[in-house]
Image 1: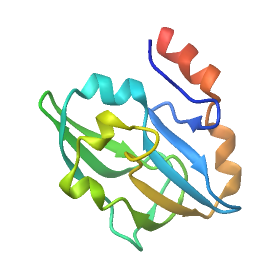
Image 2: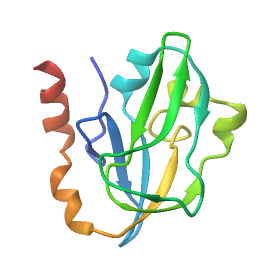
Image 3: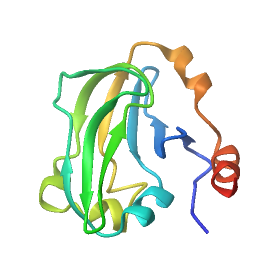
Image 4: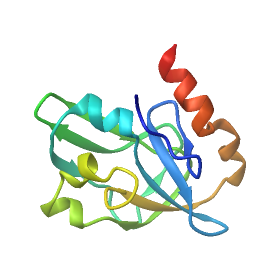
Length: 128
């Protein structure tokens, strides 16, 4: 059974979102996504200052099983990346909701949160 903390919201593409302030969010991949990938060996993070659009690829993760694109859950500008993942990509597996966060976005369209799901809705989607 995959874990999905209630304090986060989720995209259908398996990214989670934590609101840090009025217009800044933190993004990572869900427990389900990290388990499906297997052991993560490389993370390609977006660039600080990069503009991202909701639903579009913004970085990638490589594991022993496959490579997978990571999508921006909302539109905005990347303001910080988790550079610890450069040396410790396994943090995505070991701590997907804490140490394994990937990047932070200054959100430009707050209304895009409406397209994201609660933990309950996300877990229900996984069962379908």
